[in-house]
Length: 380
Image 1 (cartoon, rainbow, N blue to C red):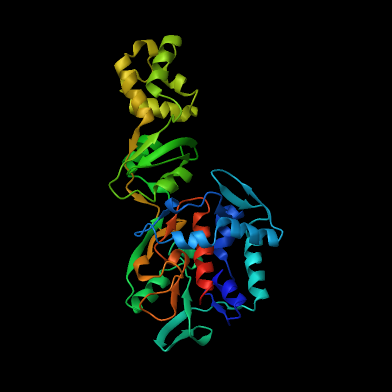
Image 2: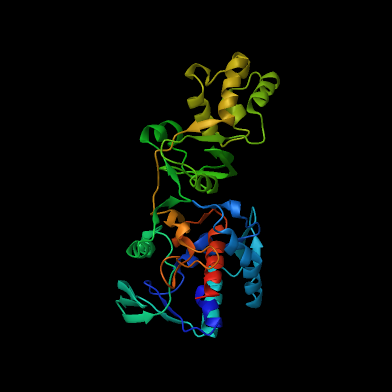
């Protein structure tokens, strides 16, 4: 985006890419369908140590501007859920659109080019595995460190530190959560692959969406979202029946189906093996196979509360290996929010995920990439 906009202003632009081709993370996004933005882009959907920094760029280049660009290239889209927009022609079409825009304004690319040294003395001098380059203006758009098998590193932070620019270390975000083996054996063993719609809450934040039980813990969109706010030692509260007061429902079932066992009643809302596990671990053993009529109301009430407020303690995340994005990046206090330029270093810019701005799941991080790249491209 930055290269396209600079090219429109007749600047001579070279994109140096360590990968062997452009846009690899675009290609894998959204399972290859590319969740390129969200209908409901709003500043509150982003995390940053400065909650106001990203407002300017997002307001100047909006989701509608990117949709207009897609219209120009005859690309169509659909909304999946919660404003998430996907490209009907898949992620390769989005990438080709951007490459076509670059070609139209004369942007050059060099691939398989790892930067081995970077110096500044009135100009920036870069040595790469494909040769040396000099430039008056340098834009760092190297993303975060998630999914290292695709070549992702903290290179952007290394550049910032070289110029004494404050940074916040990258940590995994939008990432599955894992549990101690004892908790896996107790709650989750044998349930891998089960998916449930729930409300997950942590540190005052909550999301309603699906969770997916895995061999290591819990994933799914609700967990990826809450991982933005979870810290080691924090508990998760999971409402397994978000539309139902579970205590009232159980007492009603007791009155109507007194001869039925609790796990049988639970199976009307949950997969059978999950219903059996809930009854097994959230109730005293003596009650698991009893008919509802033989369970007193106080015990049903406690169990109902547990269904609406199941408390679990993750022990870690699955890490950068599978994280969709990172928290952290170049400290926003070091940058101009209007043009993404470093305040104390001439003609140096940081854009996209390299900056300490992280969006929620659902196209927000792509929109930050488009918006921050666009605003920098107006001035570089």
